[in-house]
Image (tube, rainbow, N blue to C red; front, side, top):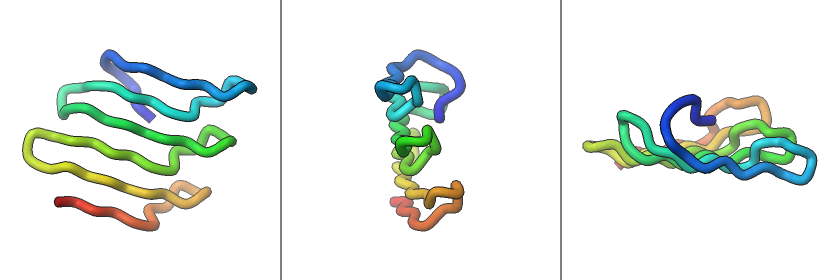
Length: 67
């Protein structure tokens, strides 16, 4: 999940982070988490490259697309 910069964080009913939308030095970023609060998808758009990464329940990258 995002650590710094302006953004918006959405929490589940039990207080776990489910989505974070923010902007940092590299550009805008969206991270989505599962019901346990573990990051499962990240989309970021930098000056040069958009990047989409999907993670399994253990945080291992299972799919990545870099254009």
